[in-house]
Image 1: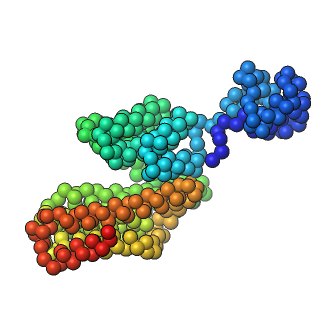
Image 2 (image 1 turned 30 degrees about the vertical axis):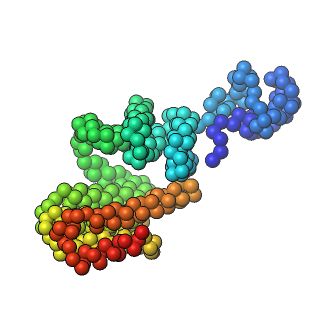
Image 3 (image 1 turned 90 degrees about the vertical axis):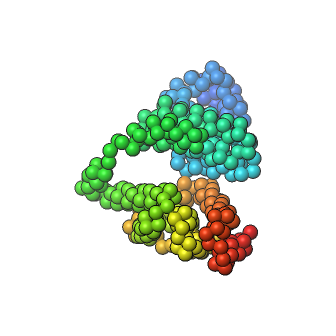
Length: 377
């Protein structure tokens, strides 16, 4: 990514555009030709007192002269995030310094601040010392407060409120999280407006935008159905409900090929179903679900072919393609998936060692599943 302040490059570009020689510009400013040459080569910078005169000479604002952009493109922001995240895998302390530099350079880039607050929240969950975790959560909160105070886009504000609520919930402040979330959830259903907007796009001949809007909302609705069922499965001990909810989640996931968006879903779903059926005392059904979870984990670990994308979501999935935001972001997402795969497998191994399984389902079948999981390590 190129630097975001480059006075010399701007001077060279504008001088050539105006057909002015280095000698003429130097004479106008009362400096040597060599000084102008050094500016353009990036070897030195003009004196601060000269900056307004240089800007006026080329009819530029100072921001234009500095070639300064307070907000990064999506690809640039993704590249910064991926770089800082990669640094964090090796040394979180050093990565936090990089994060702070990026934030200070683009303190009004609300998208970047949201991304960095998310990274701090992730790091806080992995911190070995409570003091470090609290410090990172506080820093993430400050970034979110900055976004909430400065942003004017409703979508950005909603994302910041949701992120802040997530941070508060993780820190144990459930009442604070509730206060932030209730206005978001109670804003009302915007589906009629969305459908009308899609019709407007079509009337204007903007078929691609209409399709992408409808498909993105279709995907979001599918994810909402699946995730809401997962949450209820995770708290239920009613076997009939769990089995019905699991069937519904599988059906929606299959219809929309949601596994293409969330490859971990089959592992997560079947593991939650297994735990719920274990709580309900359904030994055979619980073991069957656990076996499906292991099957899914092994497919995931083997890195087999991805499921065929759903034709119902072709445009929405194209918009989510990490490659659209550059190679650094795509590599970050691949590394993130590898970490998630490893974590999912480790969680299954831990789940199988739980004594509650021994109490309900001891026997050859359970031992066979444990042996399979042990072979991963």
